[in-house]
Image (tube, rainbow over all chains, first blue to last red; front, side):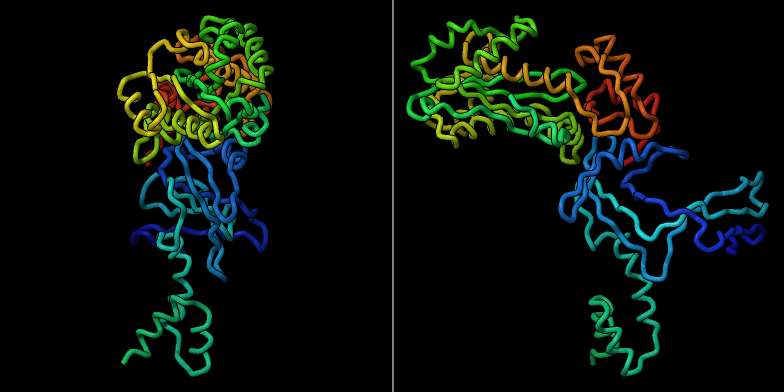
Length: 162
Length: 252
């Protein structure tokens, strides 16, 4: 349960284990003023070209380059749908999980996605946050250092730099 | 003309060519360039080159090639077969610019307009002929003097003639225009939609924006989210106006 203002609550209805269907998710580099169904399979997925590690497609005549991005380990992506739109801002709101995802396809306009892109970096954040706030013992330091270069670099600055 | 290599992936640009006649490697050749399908909102734009030894110019003339626009589709098909059969001295090459290539180029962040795309395509084809060892000697074609200068600079040693209506003045240009137009028509006729749209109505008319059949087709196949299949040139104002009025707005 999360509150957005002091007066109203948003309730999240969790599905029972394994009930919510897995859905392919595309993160587009544009805002589409449309809320509702879209013929993704017919128009989009059918025209995606896979070339080595890069995917290409076009949307509305513009070239996109994409990459699959995994959700951080231990995390699940949720697609939420509001059950009933409240009439006023004071009313409580209820959203249910309509589907789940553990990866998404991240699309960039013309340029290939890179590790400098915020969405790609964001996926590293949980690991990073955990590492930063972890209690340091000789044993787990070695383990943490070996898992990720970014974390290792950060640790170096935090603990090793004189 | 085997369109197979293009049809495998009709969202990109593709080059098709005849065998290079050995005579063209030994003798000075004239080379003509022309395009087909520049104006339509549907389908590819095709650039064609045709070349033959200067010594065989009369043979080409005798084949009664003429500007493809003055010929019927049947006459063009017929003439293309004749050109293709004259393998011993006539060579051709085509660059099919898919509608998706046209859309994504023209809508690119650093604008790449149709003229630049056209010039680069023509230049690419001349370079292809040179790289294949064809001894180009005389005329090529396009719209203006600046272009003539550009080509002359790029290909020193080749006399370049850029002339309006060249497709009717020079048989070798007529031949190129026939190759390009035949390819464009065949591609449009047999367009293989990459989208999974089931049976698609192929009664799209000429593809020119003012053709009532084309207009009706564009209205019928407008999707509120995706706009159009890749068969449509998204950069054409006809398509853009229809999407603005009837599809979801998209902000980049």
